[in-house]
Length: 169
Image 1 (cartoon, rainbow, N blue to C red):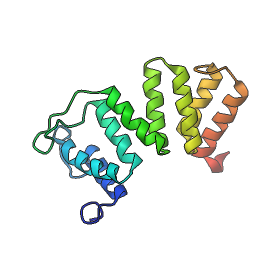
Image 2 (image 1 turned 90 degrees about the horizontal axis):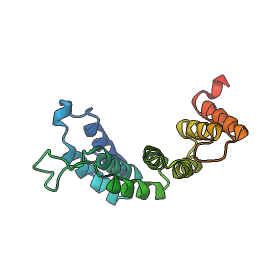
Image 3 (image 1 turned 60 degrees about the vertical axis):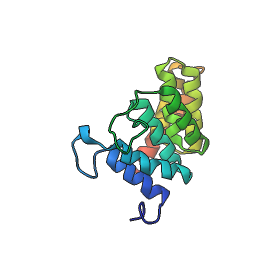
């Protein structure tokens, strides 16, 4: 109701996510209605949802962005990393750390570890996140994309564990 009657950005994104992840409505994966999901995402993005921008980026990255006439077709464009990056950057600019992590992963795939390191640093500045802290710990430990620094590696690993298991430290 929040998505359809009173277009709430979070509800719109949630509806799109449920469709894409095959949780609502329950259909076979080959029948996922990416067009319907994008309808929700476009409205959410227009309402300044960084999660929607990030998800649109993922659809472009994975080759699941529906073709022009997506309301009548389940055909999707091939993966387009340039378009994916554009959406991730827009979401990261709004402080969405998941998008910064996606950009870092894209850089890692291209063996551009210095830029990946910078995106992980930006993500860590946005939100305390165990995944990001762990990645930074690994990069500092091994000197990947940055100067090797075991003290910083240890600090980031500690932060990573503290985010996951704060009562077990």
